[in-house]
Length: 378
Image 1 (cartoon, rainbow, N blue to C red):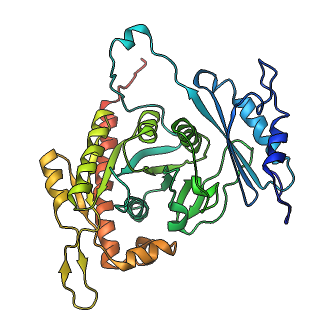
Image 2 (image 1 turned 60 degrees about the horizontal axis):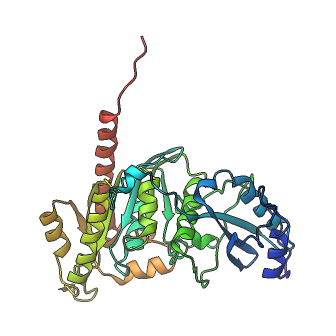
Image 3 (image 1 turned 180 degrees about the vertical axis):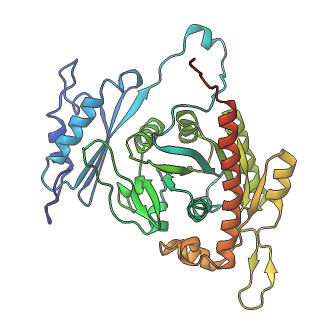
C-alpha cells in the first residue's frame, strides 16, 4: 500500500497521469485515453477508481486492474487505492434464450470461501430502519455464539460505518485482497470505508454491480458462520447482482406498519421469490412507541400490519421492534443497542428476532445438507 505523506494534496490530474502510464494489452491505448476510466473519487488520501470494461473480458483484464491500483499507490500522498472493474455491457444470450423475452433470474452463484451461511436484510423502500435492524441482528447472532460478518451493500447510502463507529480504511497485505474491519466483534465491509461520509457516490448500475462484486470477492471474510448483507432499499440491479452472485440461504424483510411501506415490502418478498431465495420472515420496525415517563403505548405508524401481511402471504413473522430514542442515540453514536445495552427491553426485541433467524439458519443449513448428493467411492 502507498504511504501517506501528511499535508500532501492529491490532484485528479496527477492520478490521471499515473493511470495514463498503464496500457491496454491489445490496443496499446492507455486507460485514460481509451475511455475505460469512468469514475474517480479522491478523499483524505484515499483514491477509488472505476474502470468500465466488457463483461466478457473482465477476468482477463484483472492484471490491468492490479497494475492500475499499483500506479495510483505510487502517487505521492496516496494512502490507499481501490480500483473497481465494472461491466460496460452485458453478454448477449444465445438465440434460443432470446425466445423467452422475460427469463426468470435464479439465485445461486459460488459461495464465499470460509463463510457458512449468507443472509440478506432487505426492504422495499428506504427509511424503515433496515440498516439498524441489520446491525443489531448481526450482533444478536454473534450473541448466540456465531462468528458473524456484516456487508454494507448500500453503495449510495452506506450507514454501517456510522452505526458501528468505524472511521478507518481497510488494509491489504498483498494489494489484492482487503481485510475487513472489526467492530463489536463483527467483521465489516462497506463502501463507506473507502470514501468520505459526505461524498456522493454518483455511479450507474453496472458500476455499482462491479463495486459489490469486489466487496464480496476481494475481501478475506472467512472464517465466518454467517455473513449478514445489509441490502440497498428497493428491487433493482444491486439486489439482483447479490441474489445471482451469492447462494443466499434466506432473507429478512424489514417494514414499518404503514400501508405504503408494506406495499413496497411485498414487492421485496416477490423479488426474492422470483430468484428462489427463501424469505425467513418480516420484521415490523417502529412498531409502537412506549412513553419512557408514563409507560403508555402509542402506535404512531399503526401496528400489526407486517404480521398480518406475513400471515396472508405465507411468510414468517420474526418480531416487532419499538420506536425508542435509545435505539436512535446508540446507532448514531456507533454503539448499537444490542452491544451497548444488551439487557434493555429494546435490545431484547432485537435479540428475540435474532433467535428466530438463528433457528431459520440452522433449518436452512440442515435442509441444504439433506439435498446435497453424497458421492461414495468403493
